[in-house]
Length: 175
Image (cartoon, rainbow, N blue to C red; front, side, top):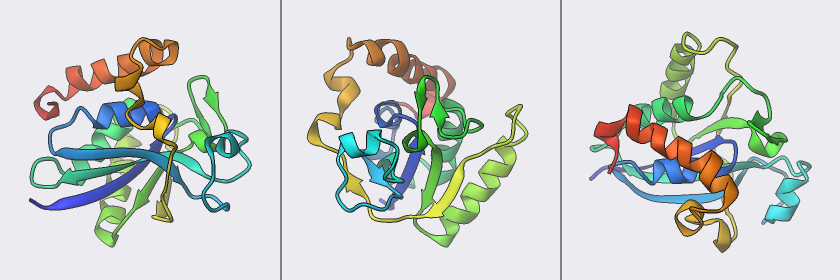
């Protein structure tokens, strides 16, 4: 096993967490916050959009089963990397598209995938690319949110279609 970590923000972390939990080779997905000014921020503070943090997921994965590149390709398919500080009805800097790399190799791979995705999307990619910072794990009630609340409105109408999309487009990579 070659365990690695990916840190990605693609809007609401409930969506990205639920999607990455579906993938073979992914052993753990944690929702949290990164990239802001305040230590130990709360969800309520993040929601103000004034802390500078993004909602992110920290993904532990076995690179022998799924590569970082494959994770990024799925990431760029399941959110809109062309909207600045917005995903659907969620708006604010906390919902920005961001890749926090953990090594020079991840940075290089992310730059390549972003360049390739620029040919797929009709508008410029605005995804932030930054070195990892301190990860603050979100409150317990945010962890495994979709699996705990599949019938909640946001989960049923926003998260579930993304989970279905990953199963349709990346069936060979899903559990």
